Length: 340
Ligand code: NAD
Ligand code: MG
Ligand code: MG
Ligand code: MG
Ligand code: MG
Image 1 (tube, rainbow, N blue to C red):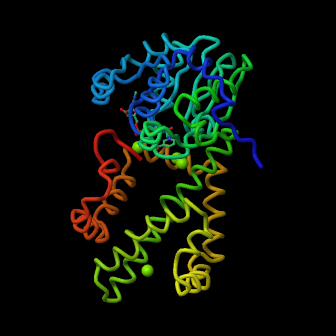
Image 2 (tube, rainbow, N blue to C red):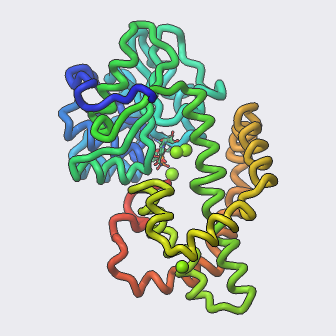
Image 3 (cartoon, rainbow, N blue to C red):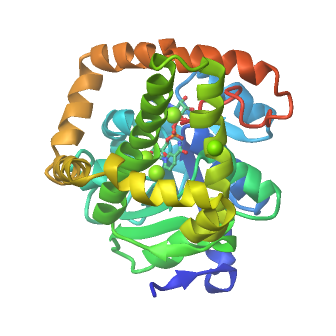
């Protein structure tokens, strides 16, 4: 078993004695800033002047500075702006003001792993990567829990990087759920693989392909929506609580036999070969290059794919059906802070 860390393994006095600048106030940024502040940590939010997120941060009782001001003030500078703008922020607004002994923190290893940000030797580089959406990092903390995190240290001139990362993880609530050691390479590569193949890419394509197959065969779209999308959450809850066995136990024997015999025909050797190719593109940096180039070109393909995803009939049908289900959590509706 891997070494796990919980509340008793962290020293809260380390983060309490550290001035933390949080760059960005989106999905992760608002959660880290508010949780740390509620844990008694000195926090400043760093944003572009005039950023609309700044008003939300002020309204929540947090002090907002420009990025250069925050870097001058802070001991630890946490990058919670989008991965694709971190390099520019680092080069223009962080690096010119960095001092030996400061620490740079990340919630995802992308820019360090792919060499986009190359900090000086006398600055520590650590990671605290929550394994869950930012809105849940905040919500679980408010409920007395937390989201698990991975921690890593890429550069450790003072030798206290790991203890600082664990203490930060305590401050955002993660040591309530469990914290695990990783490396920048492992976190980056597994995170990209998980979101592309299983969690976001694989899951959405599976839902849409199932829905479309039923509708094209003449079944009611509403019925296909309930079967292929709505019920996913109920099945995932069983997986989350008791693993695959919990799901197989709860469904009918008919579903169990049908799933065990038909599942491997959907995720088959060809699918697994494609998974290995996608992993290789992550490991050799070609996915990272493609993403960086797409952003630099003004996102032409990204915008087109986003629009296509919104226009799908499963989304039209679902939007109507969900208005009839007022019990669906309003907390997870797409409002307030950007998420994703
Ligand atoms: P986001 O898109 O939700 O929010 C980004 C924030 O950065 C916004 O407040 C925006 O105003 C601000 N910002 C944008 N450009 C800026 C600039 N030039 N200067 C200062 N601020 C700027 O971002 P996110 O999804 O929370 O991702 C932040 C980091 O956390 C990324 O490294 C991501 O990989 C990682 N992460 C995210 C999640 C998640 O749940 N979204 C989960 C784990 C790790
Ligand atoms: Mg992830
Ligand atoms: Mg990710
Ligand atoms: Mg069924
Ligand atoms: Mg986002």
